[in-house]
Amino acid sequence: MNRRRALLPLAALALIILASCGSSGILGGNDNTDSRTIHGTVDSVDLNSNSIILMNTSGYNSSLTTGGTNGSTVRVYFDPNVPVTYQGQNYRPQDLERGDEVDVRVTQSGSRLVADSMIVTYNANPNNNGGVYASSSITGTVRYVDTRNRTIEVDRGYGSNVIVDYDSSTSVMFNGRSYLPGDLEPGDQVTISTRNATSGRQIAQNIDVTRSMNSSSGSQYATIRGTVRSIDTYNHTIQLESASYISGFLPGNRSSVIVLQYDPSAQINVNGSLQPVSGLERGDVIEVQARDLGNSKWLASSFTLVQNVRR
Image 1 (tube, one colour):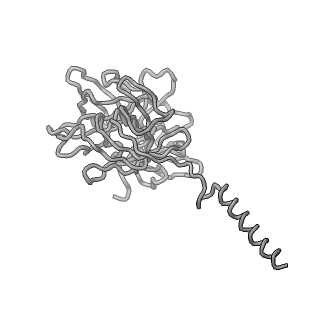
Image 2 (cartoon, rainbow, N blue to C red):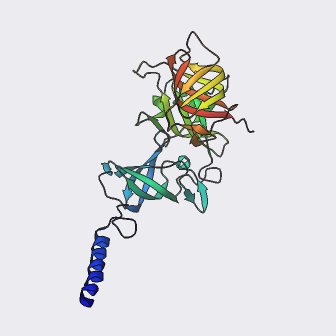
């Protein structure tokens, strides 16, 4: 009997050892997370999809990397709050400029590479007002493009126009494709990330076209400004009062109170930083680019905070 008792614990111990060897749990299992660092040169930053295109990449070899004329390129997605550091200071992904070289710590999530952190190793514009980034955001409708002087005039609404310079590094994105600033036309609705030049003028860094005048979709869009009356985060709707139609398609039966539908993942531009739309409060003044659904209902495509009720 004593011998049999001794065998039972040994058998149980063997089963435990075998089970632990085949386990895929947290404490000793097979972790499929593949985290590594990619080095590359910034080609463009797409704020619509929260992603960055890197060219001349090294340190990562996967099916997500495609060959290009300038070497391998890869798209890396990021959270707007992912840390970007340069010389010990913190910046934002949208502050990156074409030509900057970065080390990006990434993990693979399904078919995507997602940035965990970014370190700028080379600044493409060291003479930018004493710092690399110092950027802001402009939203409005293109009034005129001067390809000779490389300037774009933008109507921000309420008669407020601004002229923005552009250069050879300025990227223009629309529906996932890259264009030149000279391809812009009057009536195009854009969000421009700018940087400050030493002369005090603003230079366009990235231009995201939110609606093209030559779009064949036939959708009826407008830029609307109004005050938040209520927000329903369950049904993803916002009721605006004192709504005014700034530009774009203007319906004949305009109403000062409208209902906006928005995507659950929609974000609002707050001084150049993208934040969840759910953070809006009654009394906030916002500017929205939206498509008319009829009966004073609209489908919003982008949001910009104009005035914070708490300030």
